[in-house]
Length: 191
Image (tube, rainbow, N blue to C red; front, side, top):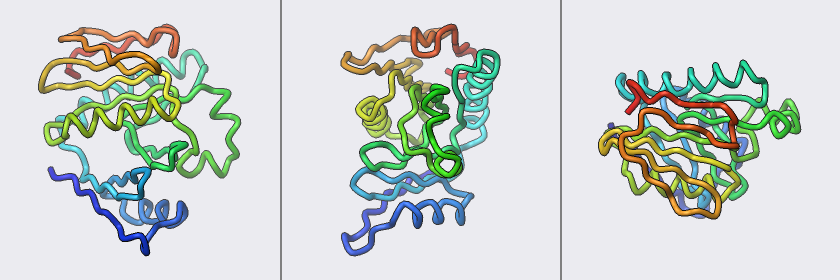
């Protein structure tokens, strides 16, 4: 499946309202917008990637519902990052206090914040370098922890603020350390 990136001319910029409306009117596609205003158009994931994504999201949501420390989100959720980009991680989590500080209107749209925790599951069609850049962008915009799951190479890249990327080869589980205390992702049938 092909991902398209459209560079709009300076004379054609979308407001946040117009971008939100574009996304709502074209639900068969997932849109992201870079900080420089480029539109990224992604088709729905393939069945195998979708099956693996739901395993990540289900585990995160189950943990989040049990402890009530924050709110979990799936891959269809958009966030307006501090740098102006609109991004949709494959799975994410926001600390309860940060989520509740938003107005109901902000919660109903693309929340104007970067999640505390993000996960990206690389699809066969993904450019690893582009996903790495996206992971770095999350960290630069306030994410406290990010995992890039690379099925092709059977490895996980762990992103943390002010630290080098840590690479794990074929892990069976991942722990969220102090960001999501007690959450452990079972990677069986994901990697």
